[in-house]
Length: 423
Image 1 (cartoon, rainbow, N blue to C red):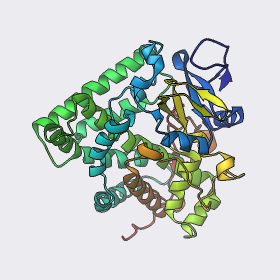
Image 2: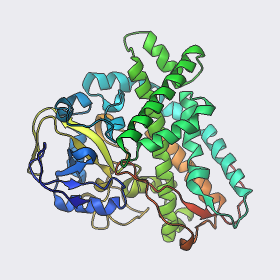
Image 3: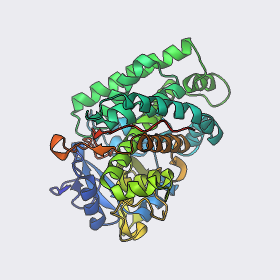
Image 4: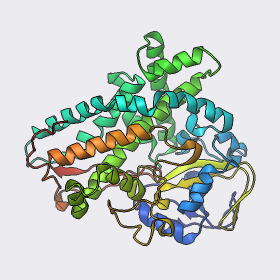
């Protein structure tokens, strides 16, 4: 993050430019926390926003009824100040529950909540365990001295399969949708790339929904199509496409990121891994600490005040954009203590915001935790001697984004496999 020249815009003083390549998000977040409680930042295309880097301020923003979601509340759009092909347009313009407010949000959220109740998620446990065990069996057949990319070989197929089965996304379309949504998270895309990616995603969603309309099945897309036809909760085509995109994206990209981040954290903190393996702390503690310390999302766009609000002495005017700085809030020492920069699975959690907070709290939290805990426990139990690839054979490459937070690959040496663990 670097200071930029003073220029006209919705903020009143010189902002910081966020690194579109996300090269060192945590160092950037430390600068944000040092800069204030509400920090004006510059996004691609000379678009301005406010970052909220501290936990307590962000928690209040996430629950403040005066701060809305939905691009119609954004003054810069009304003034035609957001350029065509803006890299974050896929996040803020999608017609879905994540970009809705008030009664519209309650209507759309209710449809998703019905599909992801704790009871329904718990009924999915045997299927998730079977999927994880099958992948571990495949990994166990690989030569012990051959590098394996944890992200590609293990983290990717678990949530992609689970959320695709739940939604009803055809097998032949899953990888392409994964690739496109992964590209959409990059904040260094050119305008031409953005428009091409968004166009391909929309075309693919139309195909997927059309297939389910012609051949309904026991899946969520079919259920949403039924809800669209019957009763008062009618979904438009735009809402339906946005719902499917959101659930696929959040249901697999975020889980992949957390699995990779957790594995990387444990392999670089062997004393923490030893404590979990010894049963001193549960695998759920690994999930929660990873979500706090190095979660799936760094800066999430956007929210907009419906009237002027004051945060940390700064006035954020009606219609200005606010970034939810989840990555920064997770390492805020004012909330998490002086050791907030340290990864510690024994930490007594003071409550983190990794799954969101307030009306937009993660709807898939139970399913995410089920997958994360099952996958991590299974992997580290099956491969007791797993270690990272030698440092001279690879380099950590962050996903090029200030929104998404993970690394593009995690090569490991598995070592000998233990026997399958009985359930």
